[in-house]
Amino acid sequence: MTQKYKTINFPFPNSFEQSVEKFTQMLLLYNKTHNITGSKNTDNIQENIYDSVYPLQFLSGTFKNAVDIGSGAGFPAVILAFAMPSCHFTLYEPIAKKSAFLHLIKSELNISNIDIKTARIEKDEPKTVDIITSRAVCDTKMLIKLSKGFYDKNTIMLFYKGQKANEEIVNLENVRIFARGLRRYILIKGLDGSV
Image (cartoon, rainbow, N blue to C red; front, side):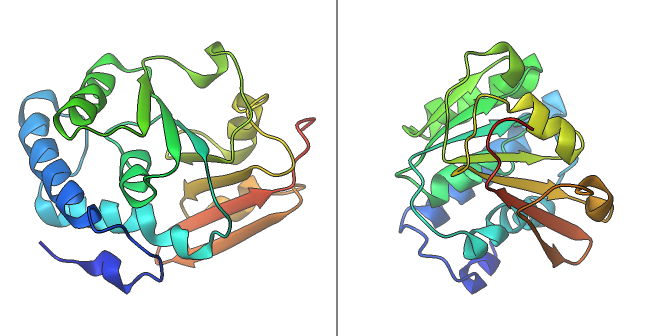
């Protein structure tokens, strides 16, 4: 397995490599029968792992809690949880077969810093968190709307987007975009909860 993630300027824990190897094996096996992701081989999964942790080098501060909207097969939230073991992640995944995989991963890999909810975030009781993440769910303004009650001016939002990211942030303040190939990482901080 490649270790491309080591090129990222971030203090990965010693357990990270073993965790992503186990995750990769389980995803490949589970995906054969349940088809929860388009990542069908190790190289695809490795690229998604790298994509998940790439923006960590742009984040500063200590994160104690996070929510992920539409967690799917675990990108980016499970991988971020491996990278930041002191941050507790709540994963929202309303599709049962994807949520079942996330529960299996949590159980088999004994991941103590994630909780999985088979629900939409807007249906849950809100609580303010340090970071909100999402990949390939809906546009940025809708993600902000869905997150209402989960953020304040100190919360960082990290959204994994495609090339139309600039169109999604029109009239939004306190936004930065980092580009890598076709990927755009949107970072937003400073929303007061009234957007």
